[in-house]
Length: 116
Length: 114
Image 1 (cartoon, one colour):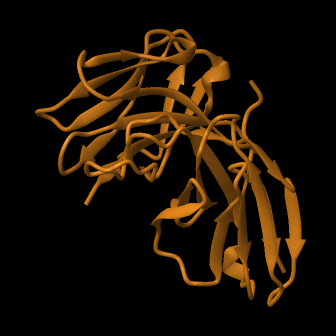
Image 2 (cartoon, chains in turn yellow, cyan):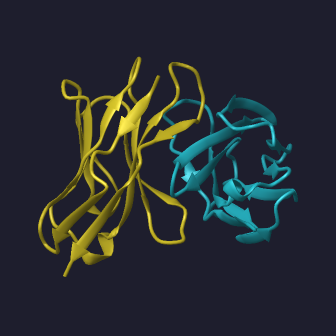
Image 3 (cartoon, chains in turn orange, yellow):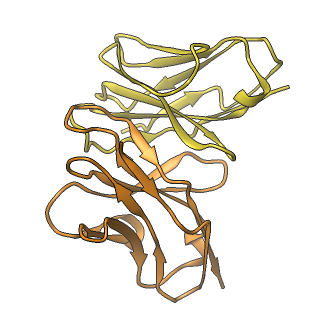
């Protein structure tokens, strides 16, 4: 069965420093991996996804993620954090094992706190 | 292009009542998925509709049901509400043509059951 894990409930980083939010996955077949961000009282906003190809995926708002097949990881990164990046971040994997389904399986979320 | 819209945004019900939530997808999207978000269980998949047919279903009791109309709008119904149904209900839409499609989420409906 498809699953993702986010080992950190919270990540604290100072503004201007690089940030990393960790995600590991377990899938059968090709992994389709996603990152979403959620601000308070809002829905989820899509940041980026990995389908195939280049292991470094660039997304919205300066975020990028590195796909590592040997470590089964898909960590979210940003070179320089902003206070406005403070939010809840979710890693997700497609529940598809080949068919066309739009079921997403989410991790537990990581709260990113950027201190000024 | 307008995003995914959900109505109502907030809802208060009492135990035993039923509730219907509505979701309008992005124009041209044929897939609508529903998710429940709670502090304890996180984000859980409820079901997906594609071209008016339920294509996938999560692990929720039969009190949770849905449907999709010919214009791709979707409704979710919860009957005999329980306190534990208090949650943020999110819907998401996509073209629905492949498992790696990006899903775009609405702002959610926050349901409080008293």
